[in-house]
Image (cartoon, rainbow, N blue to C red; front, side, top):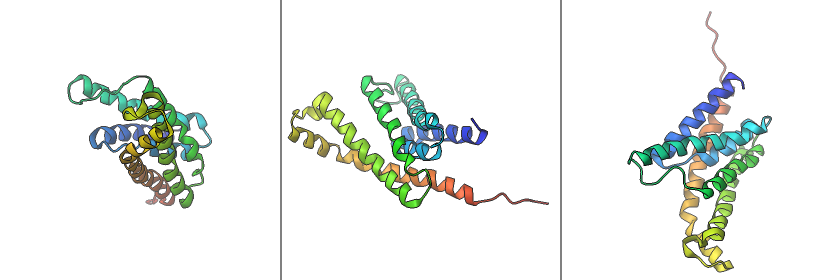
Amino acid sequence: MKKNTFIVVVILIVATAIFSVVLGFSPHIAVAVFSGALFASNKKLAFMLPILTMLFSDVVFQVLYLTGKNTYPGFYGIDQLINYLMIAGLAFIGLYARGFKLTNILAANVAAPVVFFLISNFFVWATSGGWHRPLTFSGLMACYVDGIPFFWKYLGSTLVFGTIFFGATILSKKLQPIKVK
């Protein structure tokens, strides 16, 4: 792994944990989209980065929970594995933004939270009836309605952090170091 790539990975992992814990405003979906675009030529890294950022922030949450500074644990069972796989899978959507074209970046950063919302709420409904919703079509629709407040948070955080990640990358490519004689 190149030194610059390693620095990007470490910054994203640490920043994701800090923002998740301190603000409750999670950049995980944006990290997945960004890693798919940035590391399109290295698919292994593109799919591992979102998992690493989630794992690191979950470790921080778990430590806070064990020390009594947080009310919910960082590790919560098999559903967590499904979340990890869903977030990593969103890197596929990031591949669409790999050319760093503005319309593709925007489309990927809107599509990823929509896909996550649809899939995650389906699993909530199918595995636990989502707030005890019946396993019927109307129960599924009610589960989606129940999840709308979460969707706005996913969409907002993805747009904010996607703008930061992609914007900083584009800006850094445009800025050239000044040579001092």
